[in-house]
Image: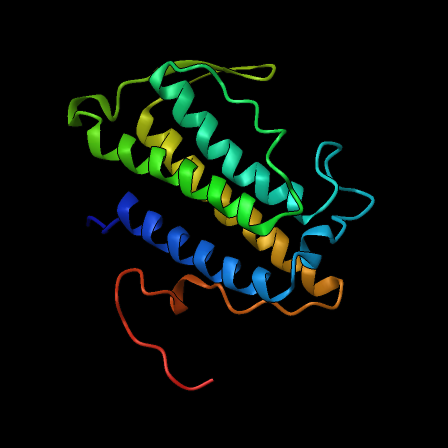
Amino acid sequence: MSSPSIALADLVDYTDWERGQWLVWLRQQKDSALQTSLGPHAAVRFTDVGDMIRHIFSAEKRYIERLTGRPITDTSSIPKQDVEALFSFGRESRAGLKDYIKTLPEAEWDMPIGMQIIKWSISASPRKIVMHVLIHEMRHWAQIATTLRLNGLKPDLHDFLFSPALGGEVSGG
């Protein structure tokens, strides 16, 4: 028995929608939510929500740079406390991802590529790496939502079921 799979395009659609939802909500917070601490047990390089969002978009950009053999961008100058600057950078990183997906020849999607990521040497197919980029983003948005809720802020629903990806309708609420 074969089972259907979610296409990469569906996850791109979902994460595009989710980014849009976050942008609207964060604009309403007047950048203050970006300064919300990730807590005392956060990874050393991330201290607040702004750091985590910059990381989401930076990872997307850097994976595409690795896949295409381009130099890795230093994203530390992207202001982490400026929602417009962050999401402008996110639009840039997403454009690169979409261009990569659109232009990679079908025969290359499952051919392993070697890359160095910090201290790890990794060999994976472009399909796996692109899927990782999208899942990585979804995981971090969920962490951000939890962090904000624990700090008394209430972001909107971001569940895949409520998104327009793969169609369907939502009413009530």
